[in-house]
Image 1: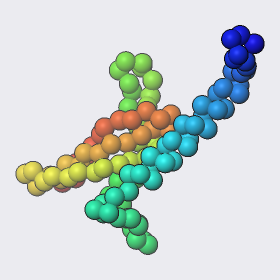
Image 2: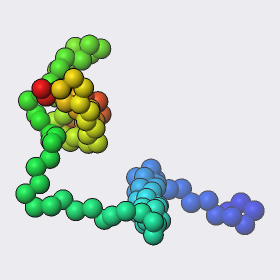
Image 3: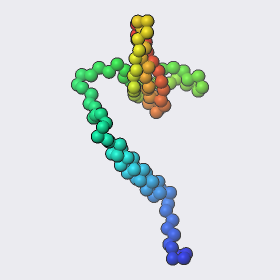
Length: 110
C-alpha cells in the first residue's frame, strides 16, 4: 500500500476481456442512439427479390501490387449505381472479398 492506495495488477487477458466488453457495450449503445424519428426504415427485402448484383466467387483479377489472384466480390456487394450512355448500361458498385478487403468494380450491359 502506497499513500493509502492499493495497486492491483491485472493480467493482459483480463484487460483484453474488459476492454472488449466496454467496446461492445459502447458500440451497442451508440447504434441505439443513432435511431432518429426522421430516419427512413426499417427496410425489408421482399420475397422473391431479384437483386441486380450479388456476390460472385468466380470473378477475379490479378492484383498488380501483390501478384495474387483476388476474388474481389466473393463475399458481399453493395450500393449499386447505374447510368445509361449511348445505349449501354454502366453499373458501378462496391464489393468485399472473403478476406475482408473492399473493392470498387463495375459491369456493362448493352
